Image (tube, helix red, strand yellow):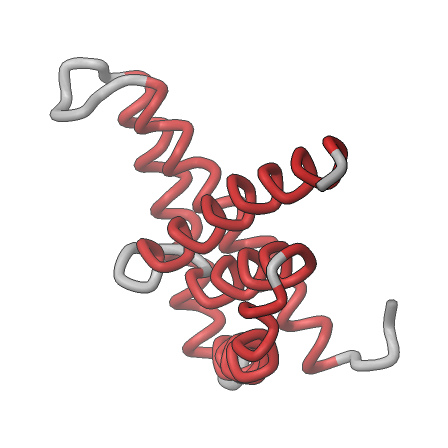
Length: 134
């Protein structure tokens, strides 16, 4: 095996594995779990074909979940409130190091989750409400 191929495979394994594991964790924590699972599978499947068979079923479920998240004004409002709550919690934990697990490590994770949730909400809304907009 050529050295660049080995490096590429190792990078795909580390990056795809991290996305996959983070996505699995976010299935029960606040965040876009299915979309990160999908991203991890796509990265892994490019170097490890055994993962390719899982990409389409997960893609269908992730896109259906994205559509469901913007299916009603109540769901949109709940998602926006959850995103705002994550942002507020991130700032609180970042600025209050005396809280349990306090500090910017926890705060940054919460802030990132809130930003990703709100970005995916906008993406989902545009995809469902305006399918021809790039």
